[in-house]
Amino acid sequence: MSKLILCCFPCAKNPYYLENAKQNIYSIEELCYFLQDNIYLLDENIMTAEFCDWLETELKAVRLAGKLRGMMEDNRGFSAFCMQIIRDSGYFSKNEMQFLEMKLQKMDHQSSYENRKIKADQYMERKMYLLAISEYRSLLLHASKSQSDIRVSGDIWHNMGTAYARLFCFERAVSCYEKAYELSHRVDSLKAAAQAACFLEEGERVQWFLQRSHHIRQEQLEAMKKNIDELGQMTEVSAEYEKILKLERLERVSQLQARSEMGWQVDQWKEDYISYMG
Image (cartoon, rainbow, N blue to C red; front, side, top):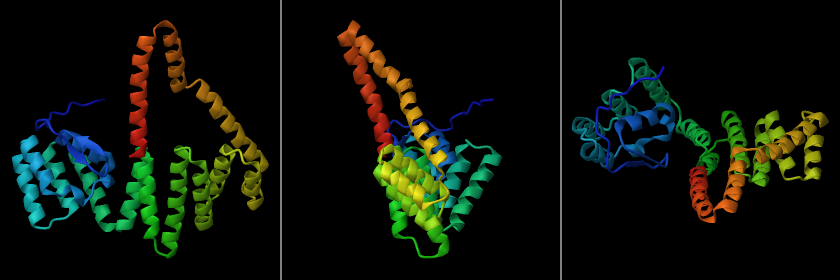
């Protein structure tokens, strides 16, 4: 069942830009909605005089802005800063506030490396693939040679391979999956590398993966190839492909209307592309 949320503060005429998330917010409620599932995409960068001024001038949240300024002067941490927003917003239930507080406390006790790994994974979930790749590469530069970090590095290489694959950069995806397998020996990394190589249609390379590991059987490879063929067939009946066919039919009836529709569609694809690029 849905619920009605009564906004306690006005909406801003001028939004506040969340740099890490590449997103504008216009209200406390919108910020809280974002916090609920993307808390790792925020960090100490939000603890600024600029953010407090925005709360005060745009949202008329004078008391909250004052509290947050006081916390910054007292060098209170990011968790306390966020919890003040959460409590004063009136957006969350008691249970939701307790859950978010536990999340923030967990962030405090985790290393910066662990928190940044989760942040990169959240970029992946939001389909912001280039930002995820950038964060993953930065993490790999700071990884230690401890066994735990080596295992995490294997996971990072695997996730980075997936990000490249979703950007159709299959050559780079294969390299990332290979590195992931070298570090963590995850069978799914080797299978993902073989599947990405199938997309490249490099038969010799695929056979090399087969010879390298007993984990991939010939019938599994055939299933991978079949899946790729099915993806091609699905593309031909997908909603996006149907949009192209619709534009072609419309052009035969009215070129002027077709150009207008085409412009709108291209703008939509641009927005999707920009969100992937971060």
